[in-house]
Every structure is written in C-alpha cells, then in structure tokens.
Length: 397
Length: 63
Image 1 (cartoon, chains in turn red, yellow):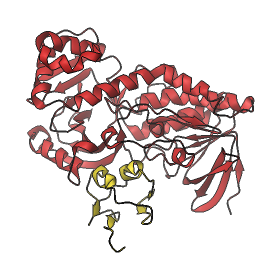
Image 2 (cartoon, each protein chain N blue to C red):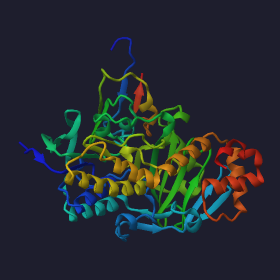
Image 3 (cartoon, chains in turn blue, brown):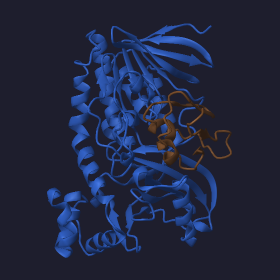
Image 4 (cartoon, each protein chain N blue to C red):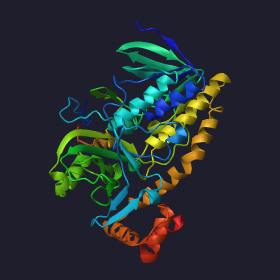
C-alpha cells in the first residue's frame, strides 16, 4: 500500500507550466508535490521545439546550452507559390528565438522546481479528483499502479492538452473542431535546412495550419505540420499532408526520419474560467496556446509563475477559493489574454484565405520594411498594394 | 452493439503513437490514455468521429 499524502499545493503534470507553478509555489513558501504519470520528465517529446526567448528572464529561466540546439536569426514565411518573406528577429518581436531540446528543457525546469523545494513523484498518475462540499481537495492517484490519495487545499491542473483535471473539476475546456489542429512531425537527418531560420509554409499545403521546418543542427531538422480539424476530411490527414509536402521538396525527401511526434494543439480563444474552488488550470490544459503560432511554452511558463505565487498566497491566507484565485485570472489575463484573443481572430481569418490571397499577402510584404511584425502592420502593408484583399479585415485596421 | 457503428482504436503500436490528440479532443471525455494503451468507453461514446479526424496517423476507425 502506498500511503496517502497531504500537501499545500498539488501540481498534476511536470511539463513546463507545471514545473514553473511548482517552483514558484515552493519559492513562495508552500509545501509542493508535483506528480507526473510518465517515468521520465519531458519524454517522449510532443513539440515542434521552436521557442521565443524574450520572456525567459521574467520567469527566472537561465538559457543553457544543455537545452538550446540553435539560436535562429529569424523566420521565413513561404507563400503557396513559395515566395519568401524573411522576418528577422528584431521585427518578429518574440516569435523567433531558439530551437530547443524539449526533453532537456523540461528536465531543467523540473530540476529548478525540485531545487526550490518541490517534491516530484514520477510514475504517478491522477485518476480522479477529490471533492468536498463542491470544492476540490486533491486527487485520487496511482503510483506504480497502486492507488492512493493526495490531499491539498490547492490542486493545479497542468496536465496538458488532454486536460483531465479541469474536466473532472467541472471547468469547461472543450474545444471546437475549428479550434484544434492535428499535428505530426518527423525529426529528419540528412536534410538541407538553414540553421539561421525557422521556416513556415502557408496555404493549402496545410489547411488551417502550416508546415514548419525548425533546424536542430546542420542537416537535422524538425519537419512538421498542423492541420485544422474542421478543414480536413480523411483519416490520417496530418500524415498525408506532411508526406505530400515532403515528397515535393527534394531538400527534405532525401532525408531520413529518426523520430515521429504527434499531438493535438488548441488554437482556441482564451477560456472564460481557469480557476475554481481549490483548483487552477495552467498551460495547455488551460488552452493558453497562441492560436496563431501554436506556441504554448512561453504562455504556460508565464502563467505558471503567477499560478504558483497565487497558490502559495492562498495557502497562507487559508482561502484557496475561486474568489481568491481571481488574482491568478487577472494576472495571466492582464499579461497575455488580449493577444490570445487578437491572434485567435487573426487565425479565424487566415484560415479562410485562398492560396492566391496568401501569395498576394506575402508579395505585398516582400518589399516593405516592417518596423515590427504585428497583425496591424501586416494588414496596413497589404492594404497599400492589394486593397481588395484587406477589405475583409477592416475591423483589424 | 446492434445498430451502432463500432469505433476501433488501433493502439497496439502499429499505427498509434500515443500522442493523446484523441483524448484531448473527445467532447465526452471517454477516451483514456495510459502510457501505451488507449481505451474508450463504449457506453459513453456517441461516434461523433472528432477523434477520427484528430488522430494524425489514422489509428482510429469507425466502421
């Protein structure tokens, strides 16, 4: 028999958002247990591994060569006719940065959490939630297959896209088909990638998503795709589209796949609720992924820091209530909710564009020196060359 | 089940990559991923087929 446990803050899931929450809750003085169903933090990887970098300092992550593969100079957007729009780091804001080794990155964050005082329990899966008088008071769990309970005034659902904890607690996290991409990626060696750039291919090659090439080293890259569920009809669409794209690109079709990664990515508007009595959700579980880029690490970590601090404060104040957790809601929403919403609207529009329109957009932007890459600046530039294209987007201008 | 189409998840590893896309997208939360085993609750499943689309490798069939 595994003994039942009690703690102040219980974090379910040791991905980046969970580890950041655990670290900041522990640093703020709370007793923290973080459980992880896998036997190893960060593995298997489920990520394209491209990451912005300007937020790391804010949450106390120190960049390290142990998890940085490549620091890119910029991004290249390829239109359907493969006109190239090059965006350097200065103009892209926080959208480019590192290509990382996600398993090593996740392990670093788990180490940071452990060193801050959090307990990490591997091979420990949450199997249900404990509720008393409508409040979440912990989880039912299994450790190496043996059932036990962990009780805590604050439970954090950091359990990723699958997001069980939130659903058990009654927080609506369902997503519409148009707000989800099905993703597949091959790590390929012997390819002609350019380590200076993360590449994005738009249009009907990837309906409602894009093909990405994130270079991990000379000759080695993550080649992946996301396709929107509402725009696909056949089984294995992600694989079919990705294989078709690779087949048309000799620089990649000559490559050899050494790894296959898949998963779901939410591209939804922000959730209306990410906290309840005794519970907060963070990261992919709280649908914090940027709906335009599909990136979730930065938002998950930024929210994780706030979540951990608020969790610890609620323990001290002995009020782990939905009301108290409004500090978390306000904190993360103030930091990036508006951008999530704006980028969701932009995604909704982009998903409707034809290949011809994508070509025009990229063409219009090629000759223009954008001060900063924003939806507004892009539309302004396109408007000057192709006013007909931007008519639909006037609300953004 | 008579009159109901059957859902089949190939999770022996021939197709399934245990990515959890089907789990996250199921509106009724009736698909379960346990390391390298995926199961679903026949009684809850309505054959809405969202998981069929979400699966990046085509491991889920309704027939």
